[in-house]
Length: 221
Length: 213
Image 1 (cartoon, chains in turn orange, yellow):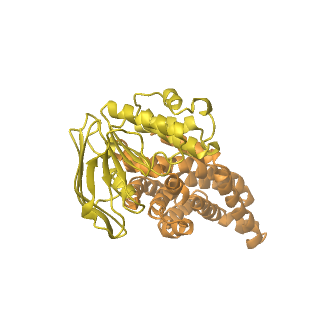
Image 2: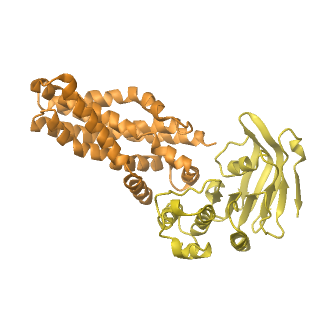
Image 3: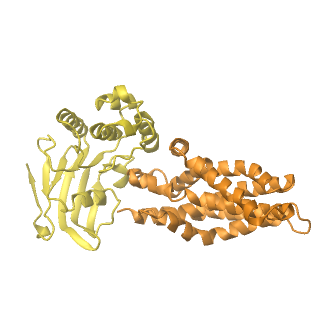
């Protein structure tokens, strides 16, 4: 299992551009917001957390369709499914999700404080947003694994994956943003939405791989 | 150990490709599946590998050796695709499959030497020629032990010398009590293999014969 994680992270870093494309897209989304909203610094800092979350959500969706498709294209997926005697398929999926998150989503989380500066956010708000992204984005990847597994047999499933899973990621977005706001705006609570965010991630860490494994099993042809 | 198929039927897209298939392969024996394109050779292999649902009948492994109780877990599957990542080197690819599937009798180095890739194991898989890619994929059969080898056109892209070498590897596997099931158009150089001739589309599928070549 460790070898699968290492292989997938190595592929993510080496395949050329996978990591960078996500960050560049994230940067592009955040960079155009001030032009669209106008030079109102107060407004920018107020919507900063939400914009970072939306940018990160969209950037995360970007590479998700390749999660299983790359393995299917070269025949590895057949062997991963056949190995389900030794390695539970759901666990294999979970490891692949973790590797994908580490290579394509963790860099977004690391870049988010810098992009927070673009939005004129306070240090506390930047810290809270980064923390909620760190905790919440794994849920997006895990939900995305289900969509990627369902659409794995489709040659151009990229947009379809995003459309399938976008509604399911809305709760992550809502609680992520409200926790980030809760950290800086006084009456709003931070702990409650933050704990719910953690709960969502843990919930999908169980449901996501199981559902994706079932979809992969029936997708073999 | 015996691989037994009883009244096996397979379908693709709702259409029955073959039905009423019976064969028994004991350890140390090979089964060559021949027949025209579209006869269901690959489908049969994928059914044995558990990657496709069978339409009816049963396929099972009797007296399976310890550690390989289920049929799927006892199979190596070499399909049309090589299951290797182009950006990783041959060694990295094989090392991954070895640690994922469990180690076999051969070390990575031995396996690479036996398929004549010992000198270029450090090259990215994408740089190899078609035949070399196939040989790297064949090395995957050696680095993890599985008693049943399912081979789909295993010699596609191999030159004459490599074909003979691969026949030697298969004979070695048979001598150690393994089973080889291969779908092929070309003779694989296994002397006393059973042959299963599958009918083409639209023919009477019950007529699939079984005989010793």
